[in-house]
Image 1 (cartoon, rainbow, N blue to C red):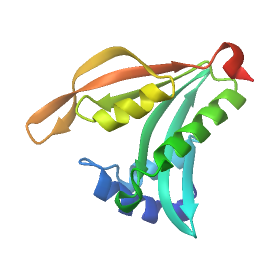
Image 2: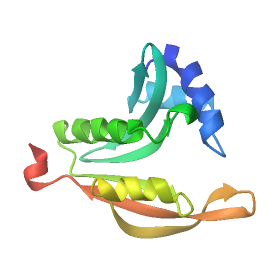
Image 3: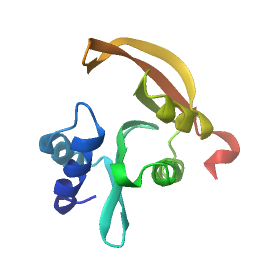
Length: 146
């Protein structure tokens, strides 16, 4: 992802996230040196993600796929690329938070090796007020380290 990609990423983010990141959030992630990635199909950005490395761990801060492109494996592809980057950069584990109501995302994360390690009560805003977040982690040790 580059600063030139932020407008296209924001357009997707505003549609697929109930409480989207702002331009400033993406700009800050880029300027902070986080792993900010996009995937394109025929020159169109169709998915994006931001991974924040901290020492030998990383946190997946956001990931999204254009609404018209969902359920085609693009989220899985983006997640796999980030995990490979984390392994190549000697990360030991990746963390994330996900809304407890986002069952499809939870299933995706579980399918690539994330396990539930905790709950953050009232972490996310929602239409009813607040929603819990499931805290998940994926260990990148042993043979996965390459």
